[in-house]
Structures are given as structure tokens and as C-alpha cells.
Length: 143
Image (tube, rainbow, N blue to C red; front, top):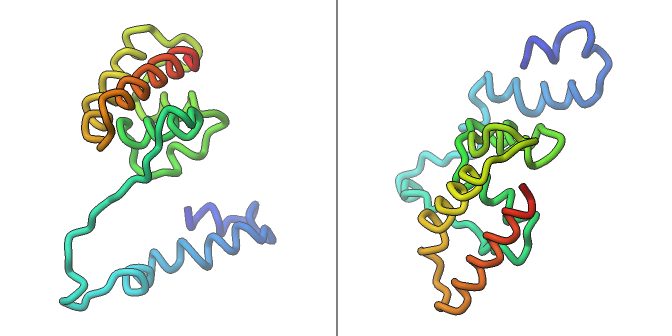
């Protein structure tokens, strides 16, 4: 990335310069670790990742959440640097072809959602059934 941002084609590009100065050069120099990671003993606690409650009631957010919790990817940029969310599903290895998604892949996606997330939500049985129905209906309509 540094080579691209310093090439002749990027010369004079303000965004390329900002990326270079504020992100890539500090990473190369190891400055970001010092800036954002504390080495104090009292701060050495395990990190706990908490997702906000995203439900099938908000289908666009829910679809992207599925990519996050079930998909395989190296960085968020792999998922965000695409034209539409279907391509994110392909990049996250959740579906094989964005234009023709077999029912087996959709069912596998929904099964993963139930096993990895829905069963651990602190919701009642009626809400669980509602979320499951909305997820099945919404994901099948999307694909």
C-alpha cells in the first residue's frame, strides 16, 4: 500500500497523502501500537467483544451482521470495498455465486445464524420464533 500511495500516479492526491501520513506510515513505524495499546499492568485484561442487538427487524443491518458473525475474512475492508452486500457474502465465503444462490447455501447460512447467535440471545420463546421467521423470510427474499 505504501508503494502505491507514493507512486507517481498518486502524486498530488490529497486522500492518498492522508492515508499515507495518518495510517500506513505510523503502522510501518509501530506508532499506532504505542498510541492505542496500553502496556500498563492494570490494563492487561482480556478483551470482551460485544455486538449490539441486531435483529432481522432491520434487514439491511442484519444481512451485514450475518457476514460479520458467520463469514471468513481478514479485515473489514475485504467486506466493505465492494459495490453491494451480495459481493460481501461471496468474499466472506458464505455463498459461491452472488447471481445464483442455491437454496442449500441459504439454508446453511440460516442454520449457522441459529447455532452461532440466535440460541444465545436473551429473548423469550415468542420473540425467538419471530426473529427466526423474519430471518428465514428476509434472507430467502434477499437471495
